[in-house]
Image (cartoon, rainbow, N blue to C red; front, top):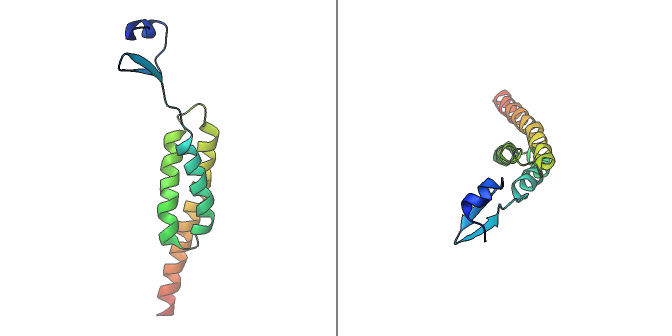
Length: 105
């Protein structure tokens, strides 16, 4: 069993020490995948801006956070871009709905 100092000397920095054992870093694609799924959902949710806005914002945040991951960077970028596009669509639809509402009165 290697000690923490021996592991650091070997260049292992992505592992953490717990109860006398070194455990590998948990590298999950959940955030990147969630960002992409939210982007796909927002492709329909932009039609109702009050629903589309929070979905796209959460997707953008998850995509931006997970772009730091080397392994899942592509999925995170795809989710980020899709959510940005539909955030713009959501905002545009919201503005058009407000204008339409005021023109009726």
